[in-house]
Image 1 (cartoon, rainbow, N blue to C red):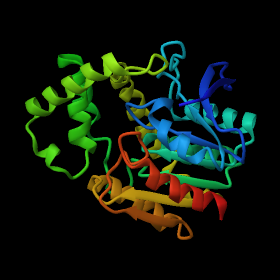
Image 2: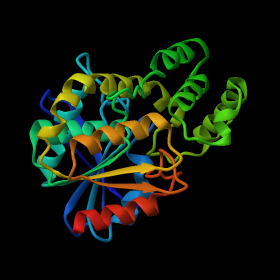
Image 3: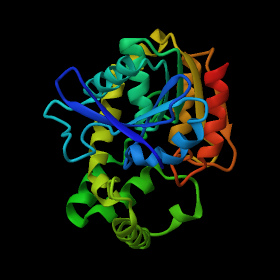
Length: 283
């Protein structure tokens, strides 16, 4: 993928990097989720770049040269995103999973987002507890390493698929093989997935903090909203979208058939997500 790189300085002085794809059209920003970085939206950014100038940040704490900081949390992530939006004049945002929580918080806290597309933000609300995996993840990562950590996340947030029926040892074996292959084949400018696995702790923190920082303020949102979800995604994620739909009655909601949680990722169905984003952002 042909992309340019840039960076913005956030409110606390942290310099946060991003990729830029395309040169024509309005600026849009894509916010990645857990065990992801800007590289995870390569295909989605390419698909959107014919109509938009696409900015994809590496959220803080993902790259070794941009530490999360001692006071890491949803507020810092929101400041990072707001700094980028202001710097590039973007008023259209898409967020996936924990990235959707960051985007939602930023829209509420800072405003300035006209059209906000959210793919299954893992909100702990109205009985939904999508972050219940976090203690198991921490334990698995500490005791057995990244592959076991991936298994804990998949078992807690994974799609409704036959793969999730595998016992932990089998899923961990598959994860270990996948991480080893990625370590040998990922592009030089990309981060290895095994190095991104420990950063899932940050996504857990942001998700838990959303209970206080997002849930009581959802009705304050003034952006146009598109709620996206996958038919095959975990039930807890559907509950979060239900809660948002109830509090944002004017939001448009679309379920992607035969699709799960990582539809926007390179490994998912980014072409389907791109079509929906184009339509929403050009309305």
